[in-house]
Image 1 (tube, one colour):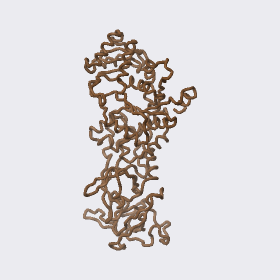
Image 2 (tube, one colour; image 1 turned 120 degrees about the vertical axis):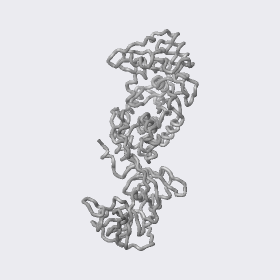
Image 3 (cartoon, one colour; image 1 turned 45 degrees about the vertical axis):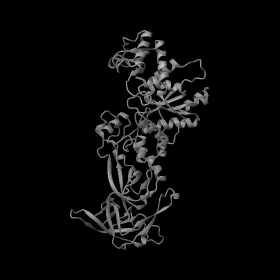
Image 4 (tube, helix red, strand yellow; image 1 turned 180 degrees about the vertical axis):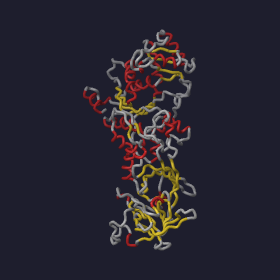
Length: 552
């Protein structure tokens, strides 16, 4: 894309007239695919020091709302970008109406009374010649009269449309007399009931670019076959005698398709209505708001886009690469903490009762500026249930009877026995510790080859409960973007648990990132200010890639 722009400049296009825009429709939240378009437009704008417009293509009053406009602006700001002008397609409704009249007077547009199914039938397919509408050769005066009646609300929805008169024999179906205006007697979020006819996207988009003097209109690859129509509409309006006016150029790039997710607004709305997900910012879907609530940073999202690059080839990017990008960033910035998700009690028999020892730990070994913290160590601890097996098995290097492990930042312990409940399940593990093996002590017992595993832990007395949302893939199929996508919904896409956390996490604030050691990265979604002072964490990503087993 930069080569195309550079070539235009080399051929005499004035660099001062380069303009870009990002034109979302406000009928839903932005998703991961939009990050690609946002980065492309805003970063090119920065490179060429040109203005960039945020233009809302609000041509359909059904489903569009201020709520979506606000969310879109919030997401763009979250990514670190700022627009120069905030525009709306509805700003130009009067101008678009005047230009539609111009086409009618030039015998390039007509009112068609046929039902939509008949219009669709007459278009045929790319290998057949289309059938002209019976109303295609209406007189200019009759078309002007009928179009004004459409505007004034005389006709009911679906009774007639305004179509461009182009070529019903074109192999490009978009050129077979496309619809320019349809009747929708719905309230618009900005213009209210001022209009009951609304311009279609194709009629609006290119002309908005022309009005705003956008030099390079960057759009995804599915609009490539619409480029001839984009150019045809602009050519009808473009005044070649005005040297100060530029004609926008449409350039396409491939969409961003990510495995194990959907981005269709219609499908996301279905999931919300069926209560599969809670809202547009549910962390299980890949809207920008959902990713933000899950703990994804703007840096990681932009790094992801930069590394996959901009191409003209459609493909599916595996979600594991997106997870690599967030894991890589959080490893550098996230403070460490010890949290036990599924606790089992461990008692150190030879450790003194009622003694608390505060061991020192680095907050982040990747960033010494984050300093150290003190963690309470005592006779009674919690470790992860999965970190213990009563009988040692092959390739199990964690704790088992007669085996030693290191407790992170503390001592080497050896499991000696267990106590079980009436159902035969392990209730507590009894062990002993080596007082000379404390982490960081120069005179500690020689450890090389002695232990093969280090476990995280929390002190029973000092730990406190936190609520955690553990997320799995919402879909069990790598590419769920098909009509029966709902059949691949994962019934176990979320698991809510109460975990035990070290006391330093009591200071956690909404928006903080942490690495729960040996588990993964977590994000403070919210903090409930009640008697329990409950903190809710969302899991961002595991420390290791968990997606390979999901591929099929």
